[in-house]
Image (tube, rainbow, N blue to C red; front, side):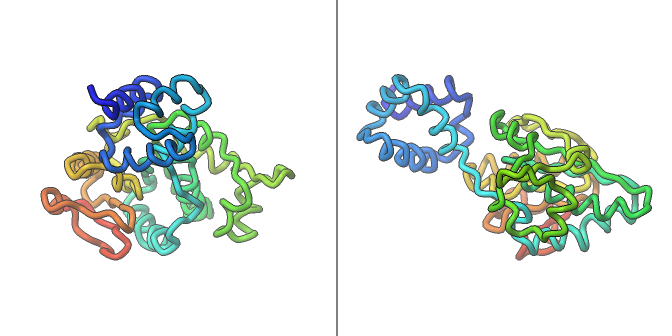
Length: 264
């Protein structure tokens, strides 16, 4: 076993991160960033450092599962979800079921919850549930806690902040219970091939598959296709794409914003 393989095995054993779910080039880039920070020159040296410095494990975890997220990231996408997708579903039924896959620290499912709250709490009998999943226990704990700094709220209006957050007085803001009640956070491995639920109306999985191999991207698209109802929506990240092997499973609704509908 060479040094890189030994390091990957250590990552899987200690951090419970499955390296085969990521492109090798991505793993090597993230490792290189930690090697530079720890002044280690080879994979063998870094592995020794990792084993002798327990605090490095969390830093490596953060490097490998790096998440860049904020509330209403890619505003145009959320405008379309609010204006077109959710109203389309609720025109046929009284409850919408959404899966936010790879939810990271929670900004995306809470953004969806704000939209859903506004659309279903105006004297109607409409409702919804959001399944928010991630493979990282620690980042899920942060999402469940729902406490964010001012920078994370930069795209929210003052009215949205007042309605949906409690100012904790220390520069952070806590999500209010009415949003939390709409979301079911849980750990889930997207590579399991098993959807978190079925008969879903909308799946969002944005800026997650950029780290996956082509085969894994295709398998994940098949999982989402299985999970969705006929005519259900799938929203990808703006830099992501459907491979030729599975592009027939979905029909573009808005190709620029990467919004698709399940093919008949």
